[in-house]
Image (cartoon, rainbow, N blue to C red; front, side):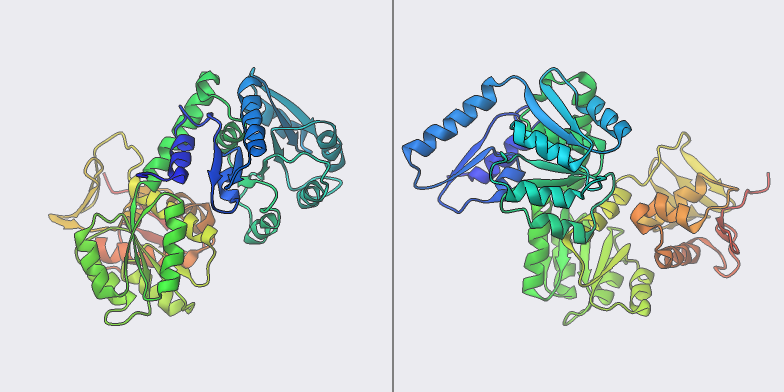
Length: 443
C-alpha cells in the first residue's frame, strides 16, 4: 500500500546509487517483459511454490556473489569493438568478442552471458537472423540483448525486434552514453565502483533526461481512445500529463496548470486547434505541436503561421512522437548558446541573452522558443550564409534537416516580427540558391 512494486522498481533503477541492487518481481499478474526492460532480474507469478522461491534466491545470490559479469560483444568492425571495449571495460566485467554471427552463436552455446551487445549488420547474417536463432534454440541460455546501431532504429526495425519481445529482452540504443548506462543496468554493475569518468557519464545522462522528462504536457484531443494512447506513451517516459477535449477547455486547463508543452489536435468541437493555438499565442510562448490527420500543405503552413513550433500528421508512431517532444523541449529549455556577452545589436534589433528578451527599437518582441533559437543562430553567425540544412539541423535537430517548409514559415514569422518591411528584410536576408544571412552592420 502507498506505493506499487512497479514504482519501487522504477525508483531503484533510476537512481545510480541503487540501480545495481537485484530486484525480483512477485505479482499476481502475468509475467510482463517491461519488468525485465526496467532492470528486474526475474518475475514470479503468484501463487509461488517453495521451489520457485528457492530458485529465485539462488539466482539473486549468484548475481550478488559473482564479482565479474560476462558480456558478449557482437560487431564486425574491429575499431568499433575496440572503442566499445574501452567504453565499458572495468575490473568487474569480462568482455568476449565476435565478429560474425556464427561465431557469436558458438560462444553463446559454450557459456552463459549476462548481456549481449549486437550490431544488426554482420557479414554472414543479419542481426535479426541471429536473434531468431537465439530465440528458437532452447539450448542457448537467454540474456538481455542491446542492439547498438549508432543511429535511430526505423519503425520497421522496431517492429521486427518486437517479434522477440515475449522471450528476449531487446533494447535499441544509439549513443555511447546510453550503451554504458543500459549495460550497467542489465549487468547490475555498482556505479560507485566504476571509473570516475564512467560515473560522470551516467550521472550526466540521467541529469539531462530528468530535465527533459520532468515536464507537464497538455494534450488537447476530442477522441478519448487517442487521448489515452498519447497519455500512456508520455507517462511511460516520465512526463506529467493533463488533458482537454476541445480548444475552449484547453485554454482553461492551460490557465490552471504550469504547462511546458501543448500537443494540439486540429479537428475539435467549439474551438478547433487552429483557433486555440491563436488564442494561446496571445499570452504565452510555450511550445505547441499540432497533431492532425490533415496532411495538406496549407494546413501545416497555417498551423506554423499561427505560432505552432512543430506538427505531426496522423498516423504517427510513438517513437516519432516522443522524438519530436524531446526535440521541442530541448529547444525550449536552452534557448541561449551561452553567449560570452550579454547584449547583441543589429540596427534597431537588440537581444538580451541573459534575460532571453528581444527588442525592436523600444518595443519588446514576443518570440516562441523555436523562433528565439533561430534568431540566436543568425546572431552568432553574422555575415555567414547559412544553408537550410544547417539551420534545420542546428535549430530543430538532425531529423528535421529536410523539412524546408517548417524553416520557410519560421523565417517568415521572424521577419513579420523583426522587420519594418518583411518584403525587404534587413536582419534576415535570402541569398538565392545558397541560404540565409544576417548581414554585418555598418560600423
